Length: 210
Ligand code: URA
Image (cartoon, rainbow, N blue to C red):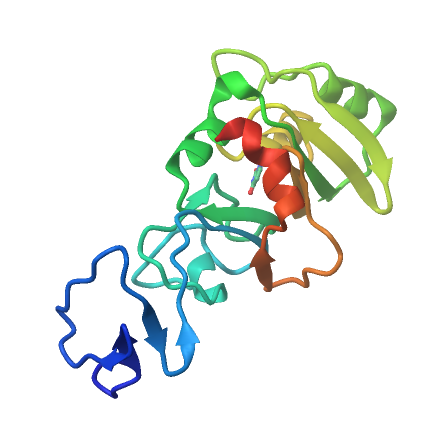
């Protein structure tokens, strides 16, 4: 944009990409004034087929799905390549750290469809903590039947946790979508593969992690 003479500083077109800006100067792209935003918060409805990484040599990443190209963005937690649903992307490192901290027990609700029908006993076992091969069993979880599957709310975020919980009851996940992350909900307006900025109201809901 600088090379094409679209950028001005204090109404003077600049041509040097190494131009140093000071805080009080006004930057415009053509006639649009740019405003510096310290923190940004993006909610993405991740489709299957994308990996949760900021860059990768061989796979499409979730960053390919968002318009923001800031280099300081990072993804809060991860979803497997074949998992869909709510992902939060931000440059607020403190929030990222706190929302993932095991001590904060941020709830996450997943819609899970399994290969085999779940019995009442299976649901009971998922709710009461289950051995998935770690040092300790999973924490208590909430589990209710929903459409063709279940809604499973966990209070921790271990590696491949939902898949391993299903394996522990001799079942297998065939569809997985995250619907909530702490106080944030994936609303129907965010189609699979699209994203938007968090609203001020949503930012208010996650303030306690900042
Ligand atoms: N649990 C899983 O097994 N996979 C995910 O992507 C998220 C939670």
